[in-house]
Amino acid sequence: MLKTLLSASLAASAFAFVHPGLLHTTEDLARVKGHVDKAEEPWNTAWKLLTSNSHAQSTYQASPQEVVYRGSDGTHSQNYPRLYNDVHAAYQLAIRWHVEGAEEYANASINILNAWANTLTAIGGNSDMFLAAGIYGYQMANAAELMRDYSGWDAAAQDKLKTMFVDIFYPLNYRFLTTHNDQDEYHYWANWDFCNLAAIMAFGVFTDNQTMYNWGRDYFLHGDGRGAINNFIYHNFTEEGTGKRLAQGQEAGRDQGHATLDFALLGAIMQMGYNQGEDLYAVMDNSGLAAAEYVAKYNTGYDVPYTWYNSYMGNQTVISENARYTHRPGFERIYAHYADIKGLDASWTKLYRDEVNGNSTDSVEGGGGNYGGNSGGYDDLGYGTLLYRLKA
Ligand SMILES: *[C@@H]1O[C@H](CO)[C@@H](O)[C@H](O)[C@H]1NC(C)=O
Ligand SMILES: *[C@@H]1O[C@H](CO)[C@@H](O)[C@H](O)[C@H]1NC(C)=O
Ligand SMILES: *[C@@H]1O[C@H](CO)[C@@H](O)[C@H](O)[C@H]1NC(C)=O
Ligand SMILES: *[C@@H]1O[C@H](CO)[C@@H](O)[C@H](O)[C@H]1NC(C)=O
Ligand SMILES: *[C@@H]1O[C@H](CO)[C@@H](O)[C@H](O)[C@H]1NC(C)=O
Image (cartoon, rainbow, N blue to C red; front, side, top):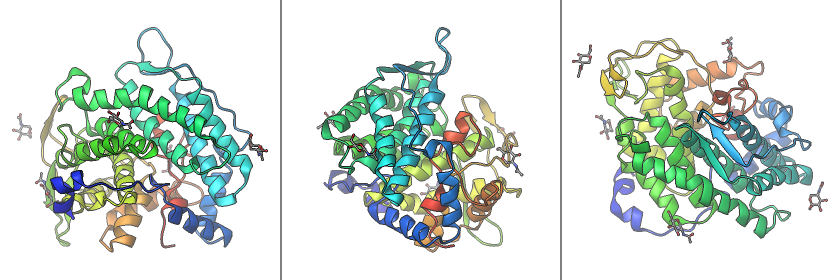
């Protein structure tokens, strides 16, 4: 699989897009609905957490902005929380529509998407605008992808949203990955590349543009920046006793908030590729797993080996203790794939997943709105226990 994916033959091969085919397929949505209909645990508890979220209500009101600002440009105040709240609402409502089938949720979801498509003209701020274009871009495309088959969402409105993605978000994603904001490709940490290439892949699928999707996927496989998988994996270690591979990720020396953020984004990239029939989880001998095991082991209180590396902040001489034990969603997806689909040892990922879940009152993974109001709580669409868990 590694060889297949890294070979030129795959890049040249044509394939029709699967829809819905970003984070969730039709089959996934049917599985979730089956668990909810039968009130099976832990899905039922996770479902209740979702349906009690203020973002997941049909009365939710969008607050579209003409210009979204992330990062201070010295003039405008930052208003990007409006965008991430609305994006998570559109996504949570889309999930409700698929599970409950009630039109009120479908309408509420597309009304949010349409409101932005009709209002947004630009994304600004400082260099953080690239994070907004990446993170909220790929997330919004996910909400839209779930709604594309709703008969009440007409083609003209969908086209308007596609135009917004292609004309407003995509140019920033592409510019970032090709110029890195006029810095060398080592300057930016991996998560900046990850979110921007995730957005390009997601826009490619939602707009049925294979050139676009392939470009994002190829960047992931062998791009120049730190978010190309071979650059992200900085060093491989063999765990004593088990012999399993633990891979040090590119942000291990920075802080654990970002080191774990990488896996929310990496997991989304791998899942979107997988759902399009390309096993990005398997790339470089399951590097996503080896790296998740490393970060999960460290953030559950165990020592991991470490090798220094240079970054634009200088020599990262030791693994960072900063924000160690941080809790964020995203590890349900990684565990479900590697352990339950592939049958691989993902024990540290499971431990971390359970610690994150244990921090919610219900012991399930939450989503936007369940991890505080700051942007970090909206970096992953979440609800992984409901949406990805395969075994109780
Ligand atoms: C959903 O929107 C459609 C089109 O505007 C409308 O006909 C339908 O009544 C709405 N459904 C609900 C439950 O509001
Ligand atoms: C697909 O995206 C590429 C950019 O990646 C663009 O050049 C091309 O015009 C797009 N194709 C269509 C049919 O929109
Ligand atoms: C880590 O291991 C993978 C899988 O064997 C390999 O493809 C990759 O090149 C290794 N990375 C480093 C930095 O040694
Ligand atoms: C970085 O720090 C490590 C650990 O202190 C040291 O061994 C290494 O030589 C340093 N590298 C550079 C390029 O300064
Ligand atoms: C749970 O997470 C919140 C937000 O990250 C944090 O403030 C709190 O200390 C955590 N609680 C436990 C028991 O870990």
